[in-house]
Image (tube, rainbow over all chains, first blue to last red; front, side, top):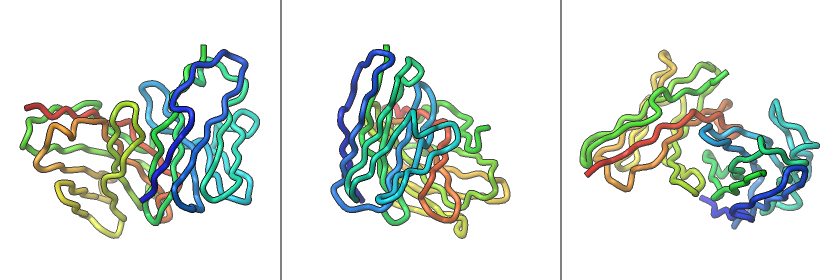
Length: 112
Length: 113
């Protein structure tokens, strides 16, 4: 398994600003993922972040809005840029270990 | 287009009885399935998985059944305990790996005393 921490756990932000979310894993992993869970919705994959290469974004998500860094095998950041109230969601990072994905506790973002 | 569906948004079961949570999928390329449990203010916790080469996988109180022809899977919890009260998500992926998961909409399970 893997132990994953995220910072911040929650934040309230003003529209037009940006927030960077950090994800730290207790072991080296190749594949990290970022998901979003909008209110009352399921989890939706934003992008796959592999160390040493550009993140791969899913349909509907773009790098300018959600830039991702993956400087090493234990850490990643997701930035939510130029935020609007529609970005209010829980953002979760996850890692793949063998045949399972393990999730962090999530970051609850509210945009006013 | 919701490729993974959990048609029951909620389920209430008495303690000690069996809980059955259902999940349907439409994408025939999905060949690996996982179930997660989620408490409020926490991330999803992995419960159990199944590959399409199997039709059943068991782990303690949790059993997952897969019916490929019907594109249907179910999670059985026996016996149900109050601590099982949570939202349960099924998730699916292709290529037999736990990458790029597509999640269902979730079922809220309430286990009553």
